[in-house]
Each structure stands twice: as structure tokens, then as C-alpha cells.
Image 1 (cartoon, rainbow, N blue to C red):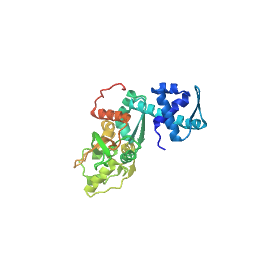
Image 2 (cartoon, one colour; image 1 turned 45 degrees about the vertical axis):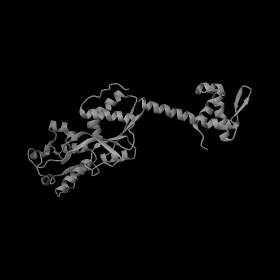
Image 3 (cartoon, one colour; image 1 turned 180 degrees about the horizontal axis):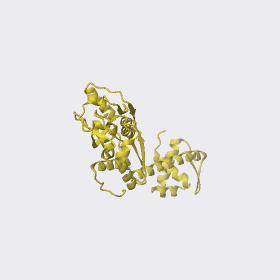
Image 4 (cartoon, helix red, strand yellow; image 1 turned 120 degrees about the vertical axis):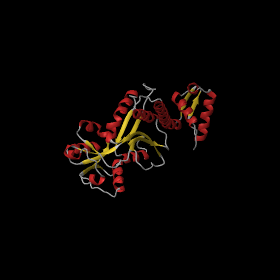
Length: 308
């Protein structure tokens, strides 16, 4: 059967009120139009749905069975419509975000705070994983947007990126390697020291491995970790040198807990960026959060200060 929802809607209102005239008023149509719709529905279903005796209207057994199902379906549809309207007006909803824990700590805290102040009724759901892992979640539709270290290679055709902040990389060391401070080192010299590196499934590690391979070098790290914060702590206690985006160790560099090792060659740069699907509309709430990210990167405040 391919029966119009409009017929079921008319049936729902008549069955609910047991009155053709009341249903007509509720639907803003004539009573004769209500009768015609019910007749059309009965003909298509092949059974009577109402028994009419003088002015009294009752559901037949078939009508009762149909109403039990139609009531649930109709109310579910109306609930869905209200939910979508609330999402459209930002009265409810959530932002599903993928990002590394380090990016959350060093870049996203202020946007998180600002978003919560502007839209307290909206929820933030953050999944922490590597930058490649975030892209995988985005491609599978499990997050709305990903804030990552953008890879050098092109993204898949269904993904699009907006650069937010340029990242400078470098090797850093702790006080135990103070004898190296002020020296300009080569990559060949760097790899002779214990190295504390991110895991291979990270953009930063891929960048370093490509750099070393371009100079016919390879490395066996002393320690591998998925956490930049842990590598910084291990560097501070002298377990080796580490390679990472310098934006994440500004406080440690300023306090002298670690220091930057100058190199003979200029290291490549990358960008922190936000990635979304190009083949799927960005939910309104996620779009508002993306606006805050762009303003945060530009170090400006968004024009709207209150929820709309």
C-alpha cells in the first residue's frame, strides 16, 4: 500500500476526538473534507474505521487497531518535528568533535568555555584520539568536525579543511643536556641522542620520519607515546630529546624547564586546522562552534555575544 500521510493525519484527529467537526476545526479544513478523507482511507484499507449512529462516532475494531499504531507514529513524527525545530533555533543539540587531548588542552579550552557561555543548552561531545584517528571518525560520520594537525598530503575528496594556526616544530631538551644549548646541530647529530617520540600513527611523527628519510636517516626511539604532555615531562627529567610543535611547550620554554635545539636546516611547518565533511551538511550547532574556532585563531571575538 502507498497511502498518503495526510489521510492518516485526518484519521488520527477524528479518532482522537471521535468528532468529525472537531477534527475539521483542528486541521482548519471543512467537515466535508474530513469525511472525504476518511472515506478514501477506508476504501484503500478495505475496511470501515468508524461506526456512525446519529451524532455519535465510534471506532470499529479495525479502527481501534489502526489508531493504536497511528497514534504512536503520529506523535513520533510531531516529536521529531519539534526536535528539528529546536535544533534549527539552537534550543537543543550537540557538537560531536574529534581532537587530540593536547589540542584540547592548548587550543580548545577557550572555545569550549565561550561556546558553553553562548549556548548553555547545547552539549559538547569530545572524542580524543590521534589526528589520523579523528579523520577516520569524521569519514565514518561519528563526529561532526575534527580539529587536527593537518597532514601534508591531500585530504580525501569528501573532506575539507580550514587552517587555523601555523605550527612551528622543533627538537627540545631538558637541563641534563644543557651542554647542547647554543650549539647548532645537524640531523645526523640529533639522531645519536635518545629520542622520545610520538607514535607512528600521528601527524607529527610522520613529519619527522619523512624529514629523516629525506636525509637517508632513520631512528629507533628510546620511548614512544601517544601523549605530547607525557613526552614533555619525560624530556624535563632528562630521558632524552623530543620533537613536537613548539606551541605546546611555550610555558616550559619560557621558564627554562626545557630549551630549543637550533638546527642547521629549516624544519617544515604545518597547520592546526578544522576539518569537516564536504559531502554532508554541517549541523547548525557544529557550525556555530566552528565559527568560534575561526575567531579564536584570529584572536578576535565573534560579533554575536548572545545566543540567537
